[in-house]
Each structure stands twice: as structure tokens, then as C-alpha cells.
Length: 121
Image (tube, rainbow, N blue to C red; front, side, top):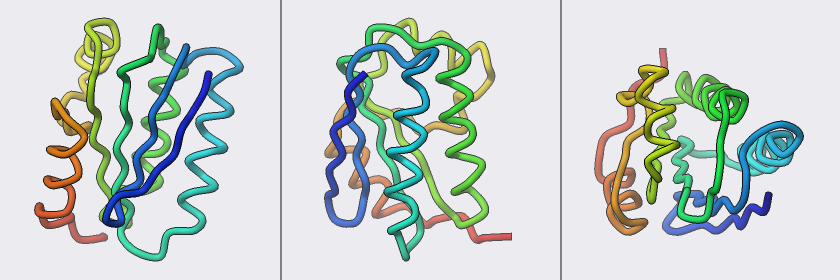
């Protein structure tokens, strides 16, 4: 699995490539945790699934852990280019309302910047 991290207007974008399952999920977890440790503002994350060829429940679990870590801070997660397999996993796990789905990176970034964050508890 390969991960390319970039930042646009304070929104962190993770372009994922390969499989999000098994041992590969640790790389995703470590990469995102490293980026989060450097954020002083409300975390806004976009995950691009364009080049993902497979994901299992452990990959979905890592995304849920990331969400659980940033949600109390008012953070949000958007997903883009979600293929049918990944979308089915998200729907079956009833997480369709947790991950905001957009068609393009531009739409996701705009929405995360222009939608009020939830207040921390």
C-alpha cells in the first residue's frame, strides 16, 4: 500500500493506493497519526480511494479509529472516489452518515472548509 499525503487550505488529503487490509493497515494508521500529531486546528481529512483495489473490515476499523480520535475535536472525514466494494463495506457497517462522500477532491475540500464543524463535547 502506498499513501501520498498533501494539504490544501488546511485540509489533509490522503491518496491511498493498493490494498487496505492486513499488515498494510498499520502504515495507514501510522501515517494519519503522524499528521494528526502536527495539527493544531480542527482536523479535516479527505481519503481518496481512487487507486484502492481492496479493503476489508480491518481497514474499515482503522478509519473508524481515526474518526473516533478526531470527532471529539470537532474533526470531520470525507471520502472521494469510493469504488463499489468500499462503498458496500461502508453501507453494510452503517457508516454512511459518518464518512461524508464526495465526487471530487475540490468538492470535499470546499465542503469541509465551509461547513461548520461539530462542537467538541
